[in-house]
Length: 325
Image (cartoon, rainbow, N blue to C red; front, side, top):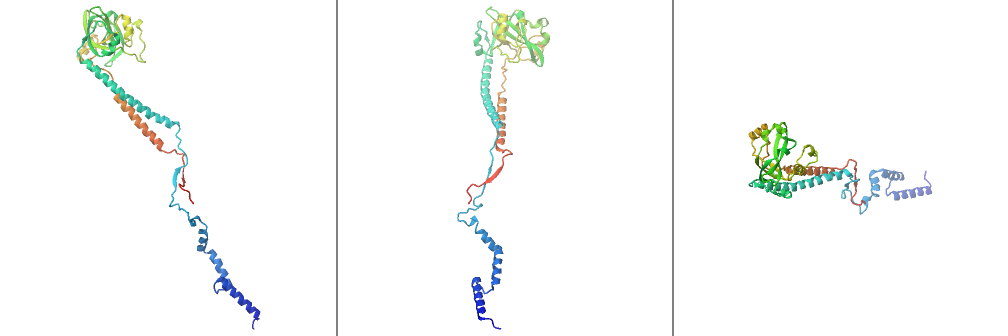
């Protein structure tokens, strides 16, 4: 049975249109199926995604070419503790420097005193200016006169070789009656505190005393005050003792040659043990220098550790060092 001519023409026209639209001689059904398959293919799907990303832009910069920078998102806050810690090494360094200056001063002072000790002793002048004693401190002198044992004063207690005792201070009346000076004769044990128990230590008649001319002592804050009314003395207040005995404020420390057997003999008889003719000034400034400078170095290192170590509450974040496109 032959189809009508109009129907055959219409089918031919439709097939030509479909062939021209699909670009292939496939049927209209095959073309529609192919379009749906192409939409679900990953390759074409990625092409549609990449077409809208910034990487396709001409001015795009990759993170590989522009790496991020690690920074802290907060600020270090050490508070007043860091200021206090900083003051410790500064103060310790200042004290160490001051001790260096003190060491130089003390060394020069000891050298000056030792230079005076090696000189021959001078006779004590009949008239002495107390204000000039500072220029003759540790100068060896000798004086002749009589001891005024009735005006003897004991200063103490004083420790000597681990034993308790007293310093015996006796006014020396000069032979020419020109003046009376105070003589620190030395140390006696407490068992010979009373004069009646040490007759051997009370020379009578004219004596010659050789000793050191010394500056008046200075009282420290821990020493109690003297009680001159009861003849109780805890430190040698030269002015006070001179006014009590009618003497000049001149202080002489009697010296003797260091001799262990002689010292034992004197101690047993109650004879005052004099001091050796040497400079007994303490010079520990080298130890102080080491201590203060070591403290300054240690606290400086500690402060460096504190400043270097970040606080625990400081967080970190990443930020860009250039504008990313």
